[in-house]
Length: 390
Image 1 (spheres, rainbow, N blue to C red):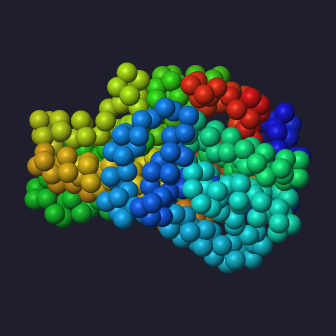
Image 2: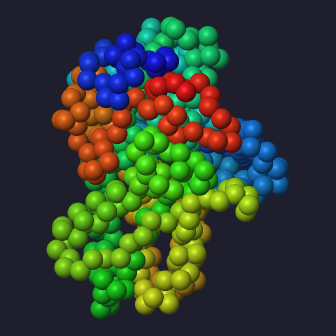
Image 3: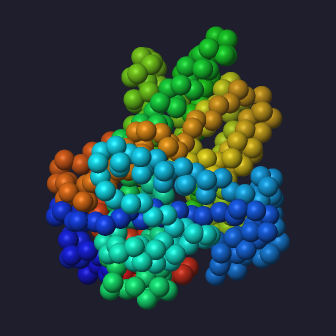
């Protein structure tokens, strides 16, 4: 039922509680250009099959060219790989980490081929995205299937994938720390500010087409128009705010909202809203004096964070006369790296679902993606690993 899976996951049970002797970890990244000449070819890879005109690619290319044509995401994944290796070594765990990307060198097909050449046959994958949607989960699973096909290694290498980790303590804890630090700094820097009426917390994530959002997660969970994607973000934001208010002993609720960024589709196609810049523009009229921007949808400070938040959203806040702070992403925070290793060990050791940590009522999420989960209605179903076909 589950193509390309290890024997423990092949039956399609939502949670795998059988130990698996994995050979290596496959760290699956998005990829990014490493120089000016790479920018347009990279963007063509990202948008292949979507009919995006060259002039639109040139508009987006400005973001990368502003940083010398180099996306920060590759160095961040190199740092994450090194941090994972150090954490594994500190625990005496002999699992090599092999890194491959969806859209740029090193490609996933190269990583899979490397794994085979080094004698590895059972891989446990970590995709560098915490939430459920086509682009943040299923597309990675499709990429695994493509990699096996392109290398001719189907049937020779098995690939499982750790669960989506949006509510794992390792992912959530850095945001709790970041929001708490930001609020403490606002109290220090902004005279006589009232956190309950003059501060707004904006939890930001990448917008996606509404048709993709409604199909994110298993259909039988009935998450509504925003699907599992929106529900997961909202649930994590609630956990973060509850923890921060308890730690800072804040008697009143600090206002917060889930907002979206980085929309790239045509105006005729509905995407998740509201846009972060539109929300910031309206804040002064409500008496808000300070805004905290929380990149809740992101693991590291890649281009959507550096440009869309640190540049555009921060500029919007400045134009609106607001004091603004942007919270760090998990990056290589020790709790995050430790949490990723814990997720690998869940599958290696077959940890019972009742013993797995989850900070929201939505989790722990599934080990094996459910039938039809996170369909892309524009492209249709393609072969995908780590989930029940289709």
